[in-house]
Image (cartoon, rainbow, N blue to C red; front, side, top):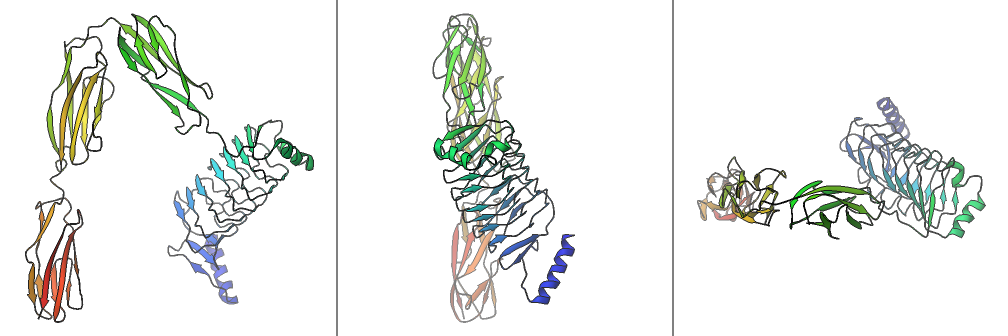
Length: 486
C-alpha cells in the first residue's frame, strides 16, 4: 500500500514541479527537508534518520511495529502527528534538543518504550502524544512547556512517576486516565502553584483521569529518585571455623540507586557476629543467619552461616608455579589445581585473584580445587589463591606472549632505479615471517613520478624521485625506498 502511495505521490510531485529526495539506502522519502515516509522492511532494525532531515512528517513510521530504535539527528525541529504511532517494537528513542513541536499521537501505542524525556526545547506537545504507551514507567516534561494537553499519557498503565516543571500552568483532561500505577509526581513548583493549576481547571485536572489513584506530589522537585529494587548477598551459605572471619559481598540494584545505604544483622551473636562492612566473625560452633537490609525500600538478603570446629589448613600449593602462554597457539588457557596440607581439612573455601586481569584473568566456580586461567594480552600477571581458613596463599606467575603479532618490517631495497613505463618489484618481509595479520599498505610520495600497487610493484611515470612507503596494518611499522625514475 505504501509503495502505491509513493508512486502516486511521485507522479503528482512531478506534475506540479515539487522535488522529492530519496535517501541513499532508498528507504526514506524526503521532501524539502521533511521525512514524509519510510518504506524499508518492517523488521527488527535500528534506524538512523539522515542528517538533512529537518522534520518528521505525519505518519512517517506509522504501523512499523518491528523497529527497535530510531536515531533522530539534531537537525530535526518538529515531529508531526502520528509520526511513530503504533511502533510497538520501539524500545529506545532520544528526542534531540532542537525539537520544538511534537504532534498529536506522535508516539501513541509505542508499547515498548519504558522511559521518555521531553527535551526543554519543546514548546508544544499536542493531544495524546504518548497515549497507550503501556510499557512507560517514567517520564519527564519539557521545561519549555506550559500546558500538558488532553490525554497526553492516557492508558500508560505502567507509568509510576513523572517530572512536571514549575512552568506548567495547566494539565488538561484525561492526561493520566487509566494510569493506575502512578504513585509519584515530582513538581518543580510549590504547593500553592499546584493548587492553582487545579483551581483554574478543576474538571480537567489530573485527578479526573486517575480514577481514584492518589499519587504523592513532591513539591520543588525536578528529578525522580533512583530507588533500590533489590539487594543480593554472595555467598548465600557460608561454612566457617571458630576464630575465622569472612567478608560477605552485598550488591544493591540498580547500581546507580540514590540511597545504597545498608545495615547488617545476625540472628545469633553467640555463634557469629557481623560488622558494618559485612565481615562475619565466627564465635562458636552452631548456625546463624546474617541479614542485610537496604535503607531505601527495606529490601533484604540472607546468608546462612555454619560455624564448625576447625581442622585448620597449614598451607596450600598450586600445581604450577610459572607458566608461559602463547596467544598464537590454539590453547590460550590453563587449569590450576590447589593442594591442601593436610589433605583432609574441614574448610576448603578458597578464592582466586589476578594481579593483572587485562593480561590474564582467572575463573573460579566457587567450589572444588580447580580454576581456569585465560590469557588476553602480552604481559605478566600473578594468579593468587587464598584460603578462607587461615588466609593461606599460593601463587603462579603467568607470562603471556604473542608470536603472531607483527613486530617489524624490512624492505629488500632502500634505493632503486626504474625507467619510465617500466616496473620494479619491491619485496617486504614481516617479522615474524608468519604473523596473523599480513596486510601491508603501499603508497608513493609523488604519483606523478612513480606509482605503486598493493603488491609492491612500482611503475615509473616520469623522470624524478619518489619515496615508496610500506606500512603494516598491525603495529604501523614503516619502511621506505627512494625510487629514481630515469
